[in-house]
Image 1: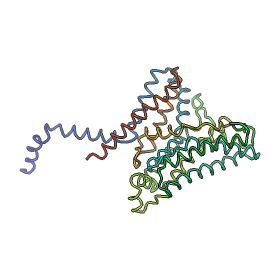
Image 2 (image 1 turned 135 degrees about the vertical axis):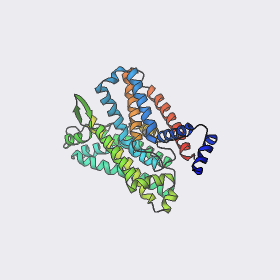
Image 3 (image 1 turned 120 degrees about the vertical axis):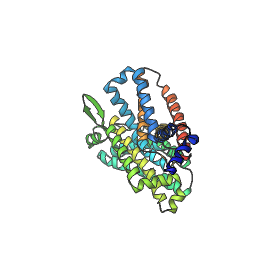
Amino acid sequence: MTQHAEPAVKTPPASGPGQSDGRTAQRSLLVKTLARPEVGVFLGAVAVYVFFLIAAPPVREASAMANILYQSSTLGIVTIPVALLMIGGEFDLSAGVGVITSALTASMLAYQLTLNVWVGVVAALVVSLAIGFFNGWMVVRTGLPSFLVTLGTFLILQGVNLAVTKLVTGNVATDDISDMDGFDQAKKVFASSFDIGGVQVKITVFWWLLFAIIATWVLMRTRYGNWTFAVGGNKDSARAVGVPVAFTKISLFMLVGFGAWFVGMHQLFSFNTVQSGEGVGQELIYISGAVIGGCLLTGGFGTAIGPVFGAFMFGMVQQGIVYAGWNPDWFKAFLGVMLLGAVLINLWVQRTMTRR
C-alpha cells in the first residue's frame, strides 16, 4: 500500500496536473499518426479537392471526377514504381521520355514491318525493361549517383526518340496504327473505358489502383519489400545482413521501366500515334508525386499509398484549373507550392522519427 501511495504523491509535482499525462499520450498518438507518410498527403488531397469543389463548380459533376481520376491514373501508374525506387534510395530522371520510347518502339516496329501490334507491345516491354536494367546496372557497377546516370539516359533517349522517328517515318510523329491487326484487342487492355452509372471511366484508373494494392502488399508483406527499405536506409548494412543489394536496386529500376511501358502503351492505343518529342518534364512530376506522397529524398521511408494521393492531387489541380477557367500556366506554380510543402513536411516527419 505504501509503495502505491508514493508514486501517487510524487507524480503531480513531476508532471503537473494528473490530466497532463493524458494530454501527453494524446499528443504522442497524434504525432505518431501524422508521421505516417500517407496521412499528410491524404489531408492535403482532401483540402485540394474541397478547394476546387468551391472554386470550380463543374468539378462537382461525376464526369469531371472521371476525367480527374483518369488524369491522375496516367501519372500514378509511373509514380508508384518511382516511389518504390525512391524508397530504395535512388532516382530515375529518364522515366518521362521512357514512356515515349516504349510507345515509339511498339508503333514503328509494328507499322514498318507490318506485324501484329502485339509484337510491337512485347518488343516495347523488352526495351523498357532493358533501359531500367541498364540504369540499375550502371548505378550498382559504377557507384555513380542515380541522378547522373539517369540524366545521361534521359538525354540519350530524348535524342534517339527524335532522330530515329525522323529517320524511319520522315516525320516527328509515328504513323496511325488503328487499322492494324491486334489493335482493337490491345486497346481494350490499355485504353478502353467502362460505363459506371452513365459515366465513362478509363481502364487506367482500375490498373492504377490495382498496381497500388500490389505494391503495398509487396512493401508490407514480402521479403522484397524489406529489402527495398533496407537498401534505401543503408545499403552497406543491408549487404552485411545478406540483402541482395544489386538485385534489389536493378529490379526497382526495371519496375520503373515497366510503369513507363504501360503508360506508353496507353498513350499509343488512345491516340493511335505518338509525338516523338513528348515526355520531357514528366519525370519531375513523377518524382514530385512520390515526394508529396511521403517518400523521403534520403530513401528508406515511404509507402505505395501516399503516391496515389500525390498523383490524385496533381490530377485534381491540373483538371481543376481548367474547370475553374484559369490560365493553365498556374499548374506549375501549384506544383512548386505542393512540392515545397511536401519537402517541409517530410523534413518534420524525419526529425519527429529521430527525436526520442
